[in-house]
Image (cartoon, rainbow, N blue to C red; front, side, top):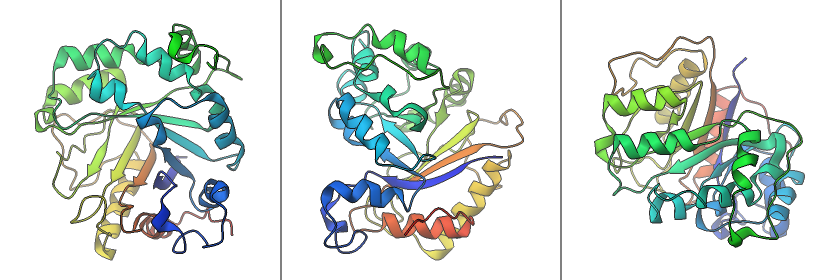
Length: 294
């Protein structure tokens, strides 16, 4: 059966205290609290800097056995190097502790900057370089440089599939060739709801779907209406059932390969006005997902 994981992007937000988190909850207990309410959370601290293996191990141990993290890849790779010269930057990221998550390691999210245009050769070379399982990731991680020397994690408990999702933000990616390229490499094109700021590409390109809901009407802040949540629930049911919603905003005229089911990961990133936790829980109820552990 398809697995549906509805969650939030990050968990450490001061305005959430007293509204989502109990006012007297110690900050060190926030992840454990959030993981009792959501089946998955995006790790977004990894976007800003390389983390340490002991941090990943702690996050792994603070969450339930069937919990999953998605991990946001470093902006150093996506925004500064702009997917070029990744011979050491990719190994450094993989060696920084990802493998410590073990069975809780979900998709790796690669968020591209709005200024990065679609370049077939650049994107193709990058997607080709991504590891497809944790054994490949470990082999790549061994190529790390001095930035993680002495604090690299290079062990795995067993080989596991590794999934990748690509969030694009330049309109030039609205190209059937891009969809074909993503399908060739089995990388999910992120379905993005961004209040009109970035292109909406809802083509299925992998055996799973990855959604990021950044806010209805107002980027990072707008809460979702009841009708909007009904629509997202309907779309998720269609994707998870192996099909597509009738109103999918497709770029490619070619339908995706047929599947009986697809896993779906959906994260709310409208945290600025404390909308994300409530919207995520409302969507879970619509999908009859029972995860909460109070």
